[in-house]
Image (cartoon, rainbow over all chains, first blue to last red; front, side, top):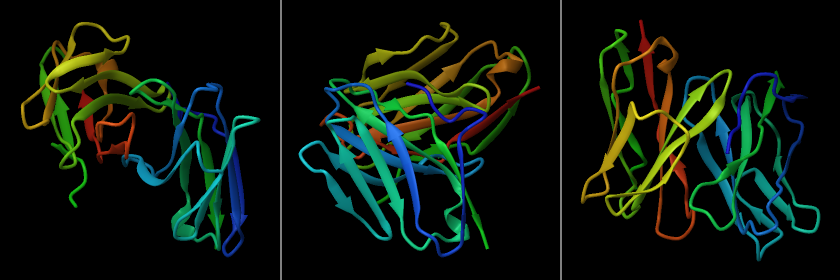
Length: 111
Length: 113
């Protein structure tokens, strides 16, 4: 899988707004999903995961929603802060130990 | 618990040299994967090791190799470095279930001059 190249989709929000980042996957056999945050020059940071037997999971200020019918994953960030500015991408595991990565979305939070 | 540790954080090498990067997985994680990340190509899978055996391999030339030790620590080696090998090299570890807790290290930034 590949992700996080140039020309990523960009989401610009104001500080305090809620952000929603979307990810589509193609493998109907995928049963485990992870969202990552990657800041410039750093390694991807594990944010939250979800298994296919769930459709929603909440963490601290983040919620992941999984819609298996349309093979769609979303990450909701509540009360977005400038420190949330980064590239976010999803990963899905379907019958392989190697994930397929989503393309990534660049989140820009304006103070 | 400690995360995935990669050393060194930064490296500058000359064309033609070789380099060895190290990755210590999260305790209890037995799978270690390596990736190359560049701005133009994104995350490119190199190889994955489990129980000291290479289980999966990406599409990279033979100059890129790796190994895993009995304590699950892994190393990757790049021989005859080329300018195009300049990248952020990341490793990720996970527990025995497929992808469980797939966690990345901070990476090694390799610059070839």
